[in-house]
Length: 174
Image (tube, rainbow, N blue to C red):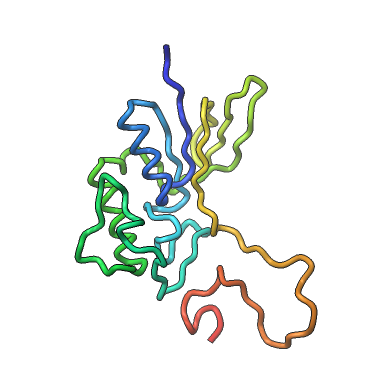
């Protein structure tokens, strides 16, 4: 019996652990990552154009609760690290388990559609359309701005920005 072929979209904190499990179990997969490296939302100034974190961001969960069971965070990390050690942790995880060669960097997915027979037709930004048995979408939940609709009542004369755009006290607004 042939194993199902899996498509994983995203190489952030969830995508990399999914592909590790698939690799360990010998399940064939392709992983598409729009950016040039792993880390997703924890990658400061991520070039994928979707993830955005601000310079002073720290996790609000203790490092012992955020780490992967089979790959502990270094004990010299702060209890509540900022984005830099977390990004380094994800890079170390990918390198430790030999996952980097299984990720198609700078190649997002343009379209995912279900076929009549229940399979997935995936059209990447680069390369041919592929058919998969299973689709795992691990693109994170901070990739899109959400504004209240209807807008809040009242008037405000200042510049309105979404938190997704905030980087530091001077960017995008001083």
